[in-house]
Length: 334
Length: 288
Ligand SMILES: Nc1ncnc2c1ncn2[C@@H]1O[C@H](COP(=O)(O)OP(=O)(O)OP(=O)(O)O)[C@@H](O)[C@H]1O
Ligand SMILES: [Mg+2]
Image (cartoon, rainbow over all chains, first blue to last red; front, side, top):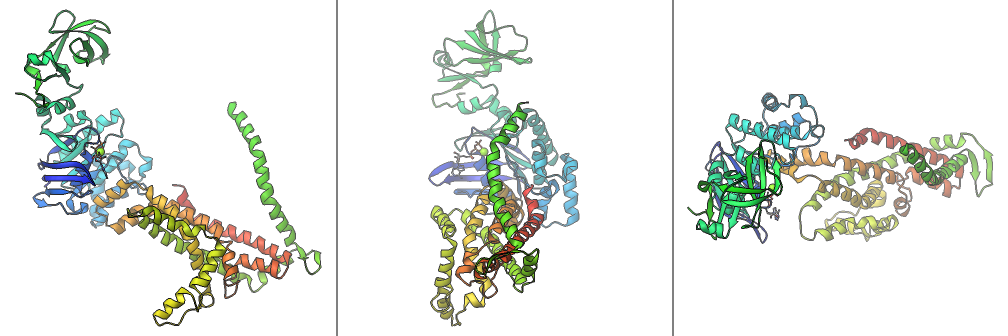
């Protein structure tokens, strides 16, 4: 259940090719996250899987069956939309029951499943309210409830948390992860937030302009990004890239080093620079360091209690083991 | 206390408009009331003094009163039914992406720009004429005897003509309502396994509730007073004498202004009853 395979799937809107032929496999029970910059085709890919858009070419297999021409309702998938897409004139109970009513399940079973879902999602008190009378997080839970009562073979989420505030987002992220732990159902999750991707995914699919840049576990992508794009996209704050003489020392066109792999010091180090902005977060401090060798400031992470400020001279020592090297195509070397 | 200041200033500024509007509405209303208590026959002696409630009693007890109320309600109800049902269907159709959408939409609105008198004449002479009308030709083509629309199906003919005029209005309002429906709701419905008919019934129709209410209320206001269509076609014969038309006949054909004014007051009462009734059944849609 919930084994989804895309074979040479492609999609164009008229003349514009949004997704060139693409192959991808999602194992049963896996939490797969699609990440990529805005407009790279994440939603389109998800809608192709859901059946809301027709593929221009290729095959979609769900549990071994060719599902390319199967209508959305028959694919056994449930989707949670970014705007929640709740039915505004129905109560929460009716919203959650709707797919069961459409499937013509008997009344007792409908009631049982709705109550179970409501209990899981802490919605029991709100069952008789309308979506308009709920907070954003509660609406999100109703949308998830409507998806889980169907007991689908896979869940599709399209940026479900992007309308929530930061604190709620962290909470819902945990809830969705817990839900996945409990249900063990395949989940495909679209986001442009790499923190969500890193924390939730079993497997991350990095997309750019409809192409898959890399597929792998969060740590694989963090440790061995296949190219500059993935290296820059995964990790927060972003990886620093240096070109020119520094890169040539390592036989590369560009070298990349993450902020957490540079040690700052006020007295000695490999590189010398001047502190621009210093962001003191308490637990961490991020320095944006201006160096003569490169145009972009280099971001450095250090502990919370470092006493350096704007304009101070700073020395940086990169961890040589952790330097990523890229060739002139932006591909990883070694 | 700026708000208090602003409020009194606002009142002062609104005053001219309010006074004008009051005068505009009150003067005719008071004159109608005034004449309704008079025996006033302009061509047969003029003002013949006060008569108390005589005009009111005569108007209701006349044999044409209740049939006229009935005809009014049938026409209003029939037109509402046709325009709302067809309006929803047309709006659904026009919402589909299709070739030449812009032109089709303008064509659909066109009847609304045709004056009632003109459209009634066109219908009467081009479509419903028992000898030369298009319908007559159609009936003959199928080997049937042509219908004399305006006498044999008089009420229905009027309903048809008026519906044709008001369908664009309903369609337009309903179309904008449909276009404001969040597409993701329909997609969610699709994924939830709702076939097209169920999506219409459970998602689109509830979304249209408010727009339908507005269409019904606005149309009712105008439909209660339709006149030109009847004047041009049946002249109130064959059971098409509405309350408005009856008043017209009393005032202008019988030259009895007092009696007509009493009828006018009844028309106001009828309009209020209908409005109350509509508000009760459909008005609650406006809250949500
Ligand atoms: N119906 C459509 N017709 C034409 N082009 C479309 C259509 N839907 C999407 N596109 C184009 O396809 C590309 C990918 O869109 P998509 O919505 O999949 O992006 P996304 O990765 O989900 O972005 P975001 O993170 O902003 O949601 C965009 O360039 C968009 O303009
Ligand atoms: Mg998107």
